[in-house]
Length: 426
Image 1 (cartoon, helix red, strand yellow):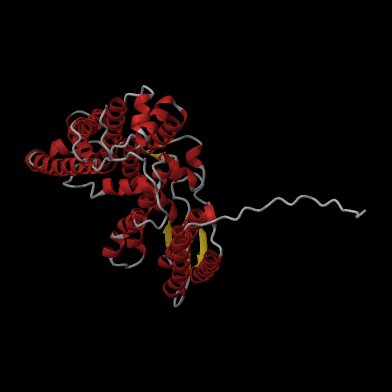
Image 2 (tube, one colour; image 1 turned 120 degrees about the vertical axis):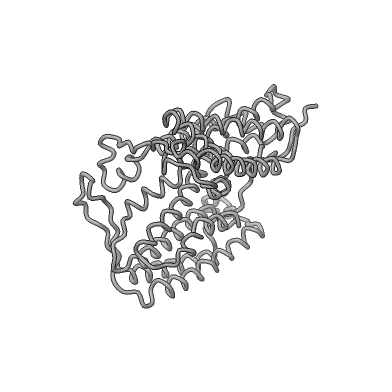
C-alpha cells in the first residue's frame, strides 16, 4: 500500500479580470500621476523659499491661541512629488482596484495643499476663513445638486437648475425687501416650485425634450429677472435691500478649534444643507417613497406594473427638487449680499449638475462635489490676497474643476437607466 499524507485543501484564488476600459483608465491615471509629480517639482519646489503658515483660528474665537500650522513650502512639494511618483508607479503596474477613486482624491488633496503652501510661502493664509468660505459658497451648488438628484432619480433631467436658482434669488430679494427675509425665503422656494412645475408639465405630460425645456426655462428666467431688475429694483432701491440672515453659532460646537467656526458658526442655509442632505439620503434609501422613486428612474414600466403611479412620482420629485433649488437661490440674496444683481448665479446651476454627476446621483456624493467646487471658488478669493496670481487664472478654478469632473477623470458614472426618457402608459 502506498501511504498518503493528508494535505490541506487549497482554495482556488479568483483572479480579478479588468475590462479594457479599466486598464486604459489605470494607465491614464498612472501617467497623470507622473506628470503631476513633475509639475509639483517644477512649479512648487524649485526656487521656492520660506514656510507657509496656515491660520486655524480667528482672533474672535474662544481658543484664539490655538497654534497655527507651519510647513516648509519646498519640502512639502518634494514629499508630495515623491508620493505621486510612487502611486503612479503602482497604478501602472497593478492599479488600486476599487480604491482607485479614494487614492485619486487623496493625491489631489495633497497637490492642492502643496499649491497652497507655495502660494503662501513666507506669508500667513487663513485656512479657517478659506474653509468657511468654501462651505458658504458651496451651499447653493449643493442645494442645486440635491435638486438634480431628486429629479434624475425619477428619470427627469433638470437642466433648469440655473433658472430656478436665479428665479429664487430675485424673488427672495424682492419679497424680502418689501416684507421680511423669512417671507422672502418662502417666496423664493415657491418660485422654484413654480418653475419646476413648468418643467414637469412640458417634460412629463407633453413629453417635450427635457434638455430643450430646461434650456428654455433658463433663458426665460434670465431675461425676465434682468428686465424686472432694470424696470423695478433699479428705479426703487428700497425694493432691492433685503436683510441678510446672520450666522448662528451652535453652543459648545462652535468653540471647537478650526472645526467649530467652519461647520457650526454659519447661517441657516448651511444648516439647512446638512438637514436636507441627511433627510434625502435617508428618504431615498430607507423609505417606501425612495424605493418607488428609484424604481421609477430605473424601470418605470415595471414600477407601473407593481402599482406605482409613475407620473405622480415624477411630478412630486421634480417639484420637490424645484423647492430645493429655489431655496438655494435665496442664498445669493438673503444669505450673502442682500440684493439682486443681473445673472448673479453665474452658472452655478450647471456646476450643480457636474457635482451631481461627481456624486453619482447620491445626495452625500453630490454635496461633497459641491463643496469641492465651493472650495475652488473660496481659494480663488483668498489667494488673490496673498500672491499676485492673475485674477483670470484664479477665476477659472471652479470651472476647470467642473471640466475635470465631466471629462470622467473620477471614473464613469452611470445615471438611472431611464434618465431623460418620457414614459407612455400603455
